[in-house]
Length: 345
Image 1: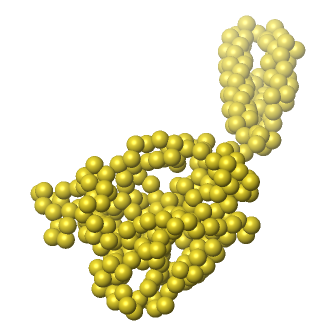
Image 2: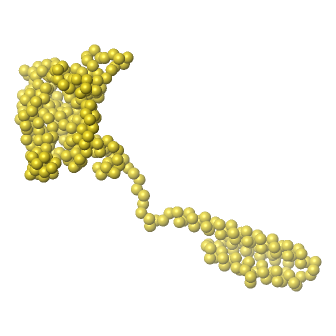
Image 3: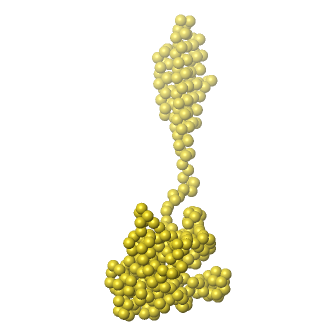
């Protein structure tokens, strides 16, 4: 037995340790070299055959071999544990974690659906500023100075830069989208057909059916020989597309300063099919929008000849449409940003 034998055993053991594929194989190698009946133990037993002079040097080499192999085995065990943790970090049998994806708000979806229906009928979709002049919001629409909506308590009036107002009237947050009707007719000649979606503002107390900010879609068509029957046909087609072909419509006389004659438009209750329920107040009908033939005074304000031009206009609240269509009971739910509600749409 010589020191060279120890060197050969060390090389063979290192090769075996490095080539082991798992804990079981490594344990077999550990027992083979470091076990009680292993190769290193046998070398210690064979030392009794050496002379007194050879034993110290040989024993030192054996201890170094034992420590070296022990260290190599521990390192290999650690590498197996690390690989096991990495392997166990991914379990292909577990269900995947879906990434949250964004979607259009239910009000935006409703606005787009409304506008798409009218676009197919030849209406353009346009927008206008939310800060308007008093003229465009009221005067141009035949709403007189004594009208209650022009009171400071019923409208959000604003101050311009350095407290100055525009030359064409006070500034305010528009109370409807109808001012865009005035703006567009001032800039183009008939025929003109457009729908105008957007936010409007009124100082209403917030409750289940009211909000100080909500959305409207205004629509109007102006040309020669436009009649009330044209208005009825357009709105019938729109409401059938929006709520389904089985829905019925009715027009009730009403008053709006900017239309004459004017009418409220109802649809048969989409919940009870017109039989009467709590949603429609047992009447079988739901109020949907206001409409009418554009007042001649509006044409005069925008520079149209009321003797040559006729037209109709209509307006609807988007929140009300969405609430009726999807069975939503509280307008505040649209603005609370509760994902449990929004994800339903």
